[in-house]
Image (cartoon, rainbow over all chains, first blue to last red):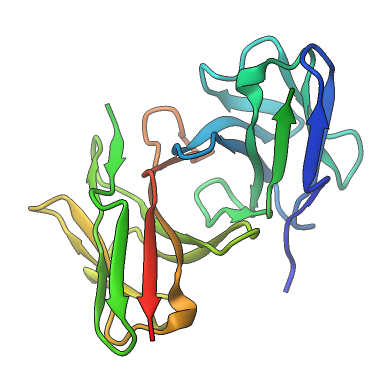
Length: 113
Length: 117
């Protein structure tokens, strides 16, 4: 069964460093999403991406964040200068169409020290 | 504001007994509702959804959910729980204000289901 894959599973970084979280969505999907889950809190929407541009973003997704689909398979989330409060589990998701089921990856746990 | 509430942090059930995990929602217009399950060290797995039609929706692994418009609820149910059902369960609603055709999800905080033998 096709699945969304995310790498790495765990990323440790120093505050102020840049990190790139990588995702390979399901191959025929057109809509891509990033969510995050701070430990013990809700899963929160960050950004959606379609047709090579951001469709929607939440207030969490500030200028420190960016997304890119550099080729036909990868979808990345970059945090330019990490803060302690960026420590969370980051989930990538994709869907065939915008209103269809979103399929999630296993997540990347980001630890900012 | 649109929101989802899962009033229980944890639900404990004996194996073989029926289980219910509660979810209530607050949205503008007709809700698109979802249940996801998260096993340890795994991503969120889709269980079932309600868009329109029958109020009782059947999903994966024997789970079902009942949409109740008057009570704005979408409780997850299973007639006979298994130990392997132990996991974290998330209710979600599609964001109809910002989602448009993109449809980002608003999640509840999750309910930990523990099924004991």
